Amino acid sequence: MNQDSFNAAAEKAPPPRLSDEALLDLVQKQTLKFFWEGAHPVSGMAYDRDNALAENDHGSEAVTTGGTGFGIMALIAGAERRFLPKADVQARIEKIVTFLEGAETYHGAFAHFINGSTAKTIPFLPNYTPMDNGGDLVETSFLMMGLLAAREYYKVDPAAAPLIDKINKMWEAVEWDWYTKGEDKLYWHWSKNHDFGMNMPVKGWNEALVTYVLAAASPTHPISREAYVNGWTKGEEFKNGETYAGIFIDGKPSDFIKLPLGPPLGGPVFFTHYSFMGLNPHGLKDEHVDYFEQNRAHVLLNRAHVINNPLGHKGYGPDSWGLTASDSHDGYSAHSPANDLGVIAPTAALSSFPYTPEYSMQALRHFYEDLGDKIWGDFGFVDAFNEGKNWYAKSHLAIDQGPIVVMIENYRSGLLWNLFMGAPEIRPALDKLGFDAAAPEKPIAAPKAVKLPKLPSL
Image (cartoon, rainbow, N blue to C red; front, side):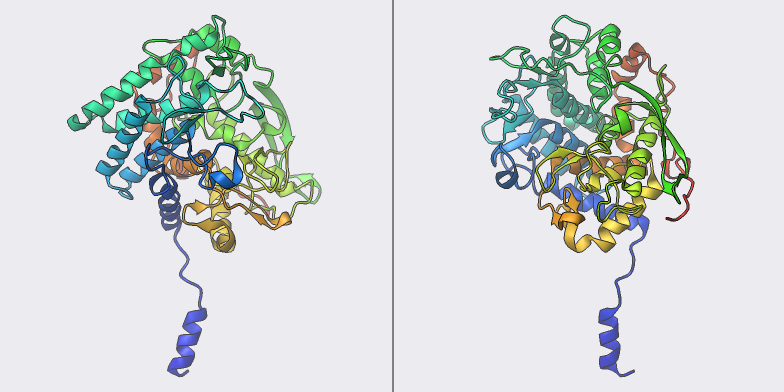
């Protein structure tokens, strides 16, 4: 072979395949750019999405409270892995907290969306829900989860004392008990104009477990155990208890999946992500369920539905799965087995690494190696895609990008679990609400402890 032929052959050769660890590094680093390079220049907070003008009603200044909480946790992961300078991450979190000090709050709670330049409230979907123009307790809880993790991460540094003090004041200002309306339950919204007119109780099962945990943990405005029991565990979709057929092979299910909690077929898989970015599900139990087993069952059921593919969507399979809330070819939607539009969101499988590491890695390799030219970009994977419609989102959403970084980190090291669960307010709150206090200080080594049986090939 002459030199020209050798060079031509070399150019056609595929690049070396990344190891699992190198691929996880790459995904975390690239996705972090959404919160680092893509943050709002004035507030430092996370945009609701990176193409705000094109695909939502909130305008180009809308930053997100809950998504910023997720972003703070992601930035901590980046600092600990030295993807970002630790001091610079601290400065960014200080910038965010200082900005939030000037934002309007509603009995201590922040609005869902805030103008990133003026700190004024941006009503949530004003054309559809005009009463939602005040405090959003669930979004506030996601922000506080991130801030408490940051407090625990930086509190060993005496120079961080001013930041710690600001976080504590913000945390202590949230009037969780106000959001009960004097009843034994939490309510999601309160507005100066409309009071509790939204009338939306926070009830299970969904993404908001951490809202009740933080409300019980508050050093200044705590709720009672009765509010948790009557508000959360008595929701009409709290208990499930059904056993569902797993993946079908030759017309027969290869396994069965019992789902203790949640709506029929489990609902969107982000239920297993948002609260559990801080709450460590390993060893977390109560009279109802083992929460790791609950979340793992939910993810397996979500994946099984996609593989079985009862609606015949293109592109579904063992290496391409994950139905959750995301953008779609027809607008934002909470995708699930009961709302299956053919849309796969990478965050669903990637944020499930703690529960299904082998299957999540299988999906990650497909997304990156097979679909990368369509769905991989400056901020990591795009929000979603639908191969049947030949539609690939151009958007990235904070509430989808954040869990990718954080849950991969929890799978790899347990960092955010250890920080949040290590906050001195959290263990007593879990005891108060009836959770098993034996949840480990450090997570089980996820890669070994979550070894899953391989299913027969389809």
